[in-house]
Image 1 (spheres, rainbow, N blue to C red):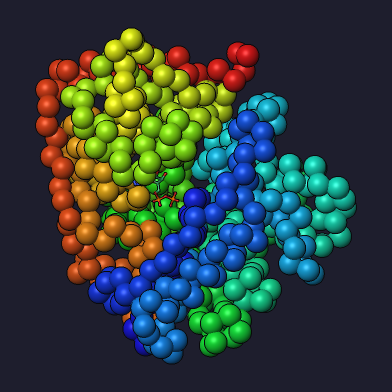
Image 2 (image 1 turned 90 degrees about the vertical axis):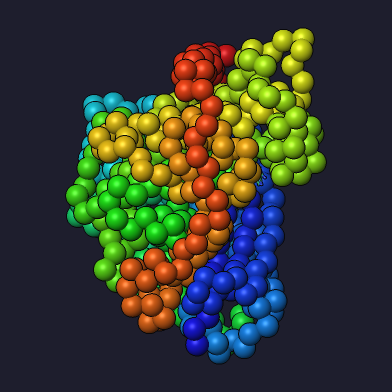
Amino acid sequence: MSILLSLDQGTTSSRAIVFDRFGTVLGSAQKEFQQYFPKPGWVEHDPQEIWSSQLQVAREAIAKAGIKLSQIAALGIANQRETTVVWDRFTGEPIYNAIVWQDRRTSDRCSELNQNHFEDKVKRKTGLTLDPYFCATKIEWILDHVSNARSRSENDELLFGTVDSWLMWNLTGGAIHATDVTNASRTMLWNLEKQEWDSELLERFRIPEAMMPRVSPSSSAFGKTAKELFGESIMIGGVAGDQQAALLGQNCNRPGLAKNTYGTGCFALMNIGDELVHSQSRLLTTAVCGGNGMGGFALEGSVFCGGSAVQWLRDGLGIIETAAEIETLASSVDDTGGVYVVPAFTGLGAPTWDPYARGTIVGITRGTSRAHIARATLEGIAFQVMDVLEAMIKETGTPLGELRVDGGAASNDLLMQIQADLLATSVVRSKLTEATAFGAAFLAGLTSNIWSSPEELYGIQEVDRIFEPQGNQILISERKETWALALQKSLGWDKAR
Ligand code: ADP
């Protein structure tokens, strides 16, 4: 009974990993699912496909691990955050596709709302900026645009959930409608200080409180899976938004420790301890995993387009066949030949926060090759992460001792080296590349008494590689200045047309 099943429901794929108590992966499975882009700036998923792909990989991972179901102590869920699902509480049918965190359809609504210092209020209450990224305006959009949705919500027929809630609802056969504090803190409806759904914000968005899930600490017994799904029920013992799960999985349990995850987007979080700090430089304040001696807050900066820029080179431009190929291509040139790629495909997140920014390539000459574009794309990812971390350092007044990294694109050595050079800080990649999934497993393991305290994580982490800063810092400073100019070019583009 010391094995844990982790469900890592990401933006582009559903994954399941079976871990033992040492963090060893016993079995894993992954399935990509369809991304829908109905209009420019809109991004949707089919909630049923999220669920079916997640269930399929969970079963596959268990089968590959070759274990008996009775050996699984509990399961943990880490999920793409903010992605918004609204479903019928009686039939379990979603009333609209999941509106994905990257979706910008409510940009104008957010601008309209930002009157009479409403953004200051949102920030004070939720720690977030008033941005389409979060759930509130997405829920509002669904209620306003799906026929009869408003009246159905008022008649208590509808439920809202982030992807963790949606998965738990399905895993328990509709028995529980719950979420954890980290996911709640991304809705723009959760009062961080009072630790409750904020009635004033709910009213402002006309969202009935009855639609909202019950909020529990991240490490707690949420419920049990329906018996027919796996043959026996499994306790759901841990739930966290993917970035907070990674913060825990990277062992950033103490104030001052920071990690960046390079997935579809890039997410840098720095643990700031128990004191609720409101950022002056447009970073977010967010809840970290709670329960079992954990809790408190983190500063966060999200880069909306990270690894997805690499996907665009693969699927949009077709200049690479696999994501990993970008490293060989980008390494075939010594520099970008003066090209800068600002991958603002879905606007810019922290610290710029411009929903109207769009992707921009500057400095193209007749000599520019696909290799230069590939290298500039990797640099564009690293420059954005640098901007976020430099804002955090400024905010906290604490230099970064090191940056802990994970996520799909962290396997790219060139990208990691570029990052270390730009930050002039060591970049530490753990052997446990699945920090997000392991964070969720760890939460479930704390609930099921496999571990007794977060301190036990120290014995589990092992370093894979440390990237030390290299290169000429004067040249790097010049490039940082040119990057700032390139970034300027991308701002407000969607509004300018
Ligand atoms: P998510 O959890 O957001 O779905 P992952 O952590 O699985 O993301 O990372 C997938 C992302 O990483 C994709 O956008 C992919 O393009 C990118 N990626 C994967 N391998 C590499 C690589 N070797 N170099 C650069 N990017 C990569």
